[in-house]
Image 1 (tube, rainbow, N blue to C red):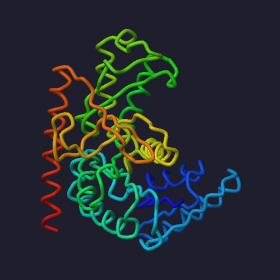
Image 2 (cartoon, rainbow, N blue to C red):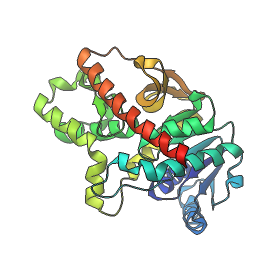
Image 3 (cartoon, rainbow, N blue to C red):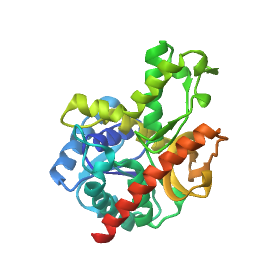
Image 4 (cartoon, rainbow, N blue to C red):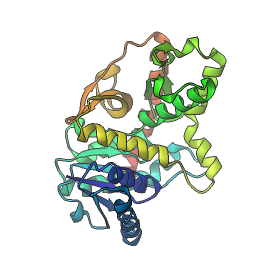
Length: 312
């Protein structure tokens, strides 16, 4: 089994390293237009395999022909955010990059599953889906898993309780317009609203929404990569092992939640057939309103992104 990671930046390299550490594939291909960087990082990773006891083979390339017959393709390519820059500011720069990556990848791996990680995530997932021309169950974006991880981390910080006992769900666009669902957030089955005051919970939600920007502002010269990379591998593993995980991911909607022709974060069942089911939660009026606002913001940015591609 072969898994390709497109983009050898910090996120892509993290994805490749964890996949190899877990031996989720026989071969990992790290692809980048900067061939030396891809080859150098791949060789460095491969030299850790004897220490980790993994037999996964890793190699870097700039040639898409080397990715042929990949089972899963993870697209991380694109420019990272800088301080003061929103995810939407990346549309013009990353739309063309992701579009080209999708077209070149599917040429050699027409039967692959595609996981999109590039920002702005919802827009890039939509663009990739349109360019790939594969069934919608084979294209998904990594967003809700990362947002949920941040949300859960901050709940653990506030309560001191184990992260293993925290379960939650988030909907909508990645980042600023994500829709928190305290009704579906529990600690060992106990509703989080019984453990944290409304004021503190609101602060946690706000911090989760701005989680990426917080790290960008701290790093100054880059953006988050450990958590995004790990979240991406959780999706890879769910497909490889047919785990039937219920995970919040960005997928193409065609009537679900009343939305069409848009990519948005919703809970799905992820297994050997990719997106095996979209779970439609019974939302109250307030949650529906927040999801509508998120949808409208994502839809607007998608239209802008498609216009850019059309002019390219």
